[in-house]
Image 1 (cartoon, rainbow, N blue to C red):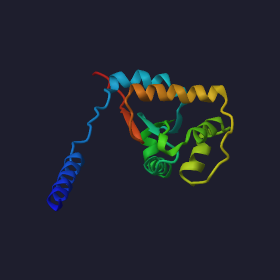
Image 2: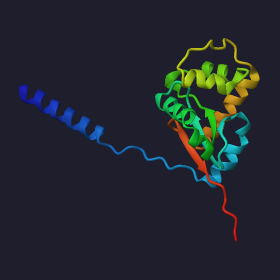
Image 3: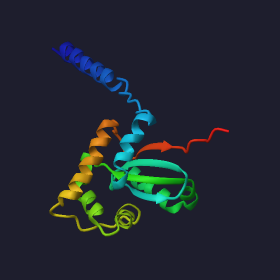
Image 4: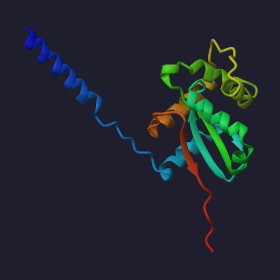
Length: 167
């Protein structure tokens, strides 16, 4: 009986080892030529920071720690704001349950100011109880594009450099 239990334990440990060592699923980023028309289709929903010639499209979640670090870095670095124009899109990470928070930010009189309050200053804001149809549609438009682009992490970035003119 002891030998059976030992063999069973070894078998379980071995199967756990195999499971833990499976390669991660590799996702390929969508080519910018395919992504850009989709990004431009939702650009009216973007919160913009910076004035640079290089366009940076970023999908973020307002409570995701890495998204917060990213927005804080942009906000504090004026040099980056001169090099890049950031187009920020809120795309909820379901585990954070931020749908109402995102809607509250988009509904604000100054969504960018509200974003900085939440993400940089880490202040809590009053969340909407009822989401207006227009705001819900914006969130769904962004989500549809994000799904087409297979966005699976936050922040998720696309960089569009200006085209060089031929001489």
